[in-house]
Length: 259
Length: 263
Figure 1 (tube, each protein chain N blue to C red):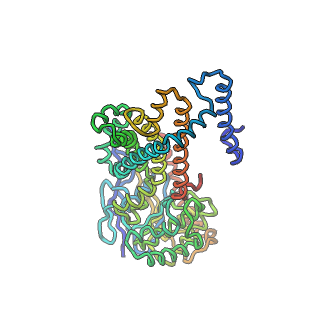
Figure 2 (tube, chains in turn red, blue):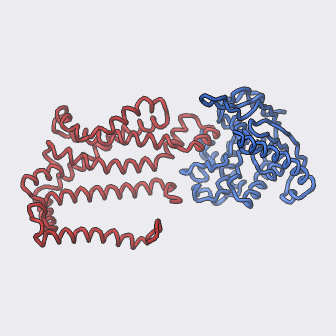
Figure 3 (cartoon, rainbow over the protein chains, first blue to last red):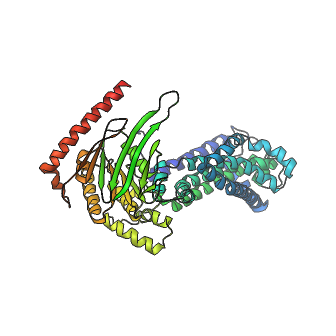
């Protein structure tokens, strides 16, 4: 191994898969041998079986649907407001000076700590779940987008002005398109965080969703179901991440050049 | 007929607790239509500052700059600029980069394409219209930047060491290309460089600036005939002028190094 030397794509895939295999093998070893009691950790086979039952007989698909809906809904609302605000903050320094201190403070407020308050304000319905996702992702989005837009290369800005660009078209034709690939990356990253908030929101005061299934299973000591739920979250997260990456590559081919 | 008048333009930078640093002393420069003026000087002598003030990207501390008798306030499409750094918009193709200023003027797309294609041809980039900047060499990027500035049909072309980052061979080709275009288009050009060969070869007038705080120390007309060919760089007239300018610039470089050592 030499530092920073790339590996072949085939080797890369093989190495990536082999860790998963190793992980499952270790898990099987400690559970099938009886070294860990089934009360604490179910074996992989039992997990797959009860996962199948969950999906076919217990309507787990509906739970998954609810969770996805909440994440996407809350995240879209946050993004719809964060995008214009972040761009304006990045472009116009007085607007940044007005919002930035508060947003910087608000991003450190843990979204999960708001759950009791939100239940008080919005009940245990969907509005509360969306609000948790919103609080968890909005402030992060705003701040990161503002930084990216504010970091636009100054020489490009100057070039645009000498080509006759007005202030408005500088924002529209230089700041936004230049920052777009990085903004897409930020959206991808923060969506990943939104997945952790939704489960927390569903652990408390929910009647559906993956998080709700996990709390129910805890009462029954059904570790197989809990693990299955966690793995489903991981898989959906991975899928949405790959989809985002793929879309970004398609939308911004120029940003891939020279990488 | 003067197109540009620089009158008593100076620039100093405020620094907390100290006397302001003077980057450019009160400078006068008259530029006539079709002049190709190269500005030579040691680094940090304020030549780029002067150019940026003319471009409207920097503001003078005193004095004024008049373009066609009108005071300059801020950058505009009447002064096209080519920078030393690669400033093509990376998200736009060569064609759309050249169209940038035309689109800003809300020209119909067909007209934009006509103009852009003509200039892409002039800088020898036909066939590269759909390439992104990162797919081009440095020289090709600067040719695109030149086409982009020219497509706007500016009154003046301002160039801040545009070939400074290119290798020697590419730079010589670029000089001939730019000169050919200038001979054809008859643009008025203000061209900052620290390369004496380049300054003489390109110019109808060479201006030498002193070490910081910069001022114009020498102003020479270059009477080499047009069209110019690179072989001209070996003629006695060229060598003579080059020798004189080398001497002058050298003195300033030494002065600026002593200044740095003293501070």
